[in-house]
Length: 418
Image (cartoon, rainbow, N blue to C red):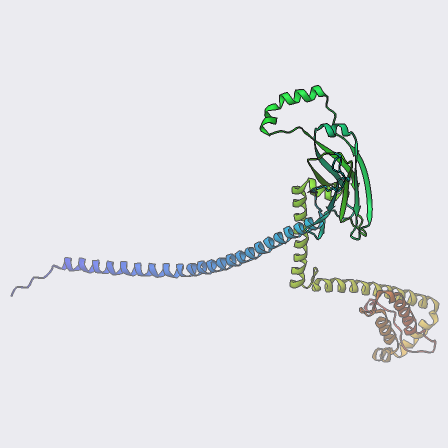
């Protein structure tokens, strides 16, 4: 049978196309591998950054929530403290109570006058346990009388009002009497007012009466040892006519109470802010005490103390070195023959002097150096005594040379300085 075969050119083109496709796929695979190798660390880094950022955000949010709760608690406590202070420090501003007069009626009823003076007993106790008036606070006490413009009261003229304050045992601690009367009005004025206000008088919306205010005490202060718990009010007239009466007690504040009463909002803001700041300072010091163990960390304090001790030690070492140089210079000037003898002896015994160092001089220097370094744990009040002892140690250690000695004594050089 006849078999169809592709020409060679077509087969070659197919081979080239297959090779190009393989190369393209290989390049794509290598590009994807390179991209994956490049993006892997980047994604891992982004994941770590996101995790750290989320952790920091959670921690910051938690700390902010705790701080907010603490501030709200401190603010509430500040308001509570100011309210408690205001309630306990500020007394009642005013007190008003009705006055009910009583009199006897066992006399001859033919007379129009009363059988006794109208009298009333007033209590200064609030809720039967608390005093109305605070100790040492000045009060104004007044009595309001509502009296009709009757012919009897007009003919009455002046009359006396007496008030006596008493203690728990019934002892009278203060008494006062004041006079008063109705305000004068002429007959023409009464007729005109009656005609003008007649509609109100007819409807009962107005009455022909006067309100008389009698000031009994202008600056009354109750005694802390004998407080007033009540008062007796007496009107010394048997013909007086009264509709009703009212006793009023008003406080006059001074100092801080004056500011608290007349400027309540400003006082509240200042008081709450002061309490809040004070509580914040207390909480801050407590936090520092809990975290660091104090306002200043103990490490810093230790470093400061050690630095101060090292400075003092260096100063004392410098002073001891200067003293030793001065003493050695004086010895050298005062004993020249000794130095010469030592030099002569050193010519014959050079090897011995080099091999055998002086046993006394280093010991003296060591003693002086040990005596000059004070103990850092001792108090500063014994520094002067230690310095005197150091000087004596230096003199004891540095013995004067004799002419018969053959050992070489060297002058202290810089290597011997403390």
